[in-house]
Image (tube, rainbow, N blue to C red):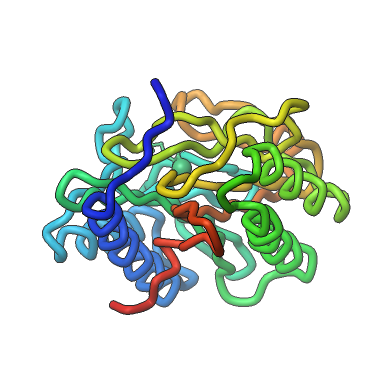
Length: 253
Ligand code: MF3
Ligand code: CO
């Protein structure tokens, strides 16, 4: 499938989907506390998305059984909410969600501390977020896709962290996953040339230790191979001739 350029009308719908998702993730960040279950997070997130008349895009996507991916500690992504999985002080929780507004998608993720966490965990969360911002310094028309990929990887690796290779970011629009793939590592080729109107979900997944991951028997939950912590940070981004517009950091709701 070719990489699509969105029209002004389409971008307005994605902008709206982005605002609603940012509001949803902010709500979850505020609500998270020790003693709640990962299923509680899913319920609050789904209710928030539906309160805007939107649909949570992950629910039933390829058979995924929930609206919010909730991944705790060594879980990298795609953790399945579970009413028996209770959060405790010191955990780190990655929240990943998608919204469909009038047929257009947004996709974003944040890793959140439950109460007070270790200095190491705090740093992993911060560097993962910063690696996204290092990447989008290059997210503008005229650059090539690999400029973003390389910048994310070199920043995370300079802190000694492992950059997940088995899962990547992606184009986004009328589908959750569109071309191009957006790796968080050096592709060793320039990749496509970035053009105004391209919309990308850029999503570093960064491990404290090895980059290697495994899948649990539920066929969804991705965990670090060495059992060390992992963090995730994702936004839906519009390429322009100037600064990129980050749809899922729009606080105007
Ligand atoms: N945010 C994830 C991604 O970017 C999607 C989760 S997969 C799902 O690919 F099945 F849970 F939807
Ligand atoms: Co994504």
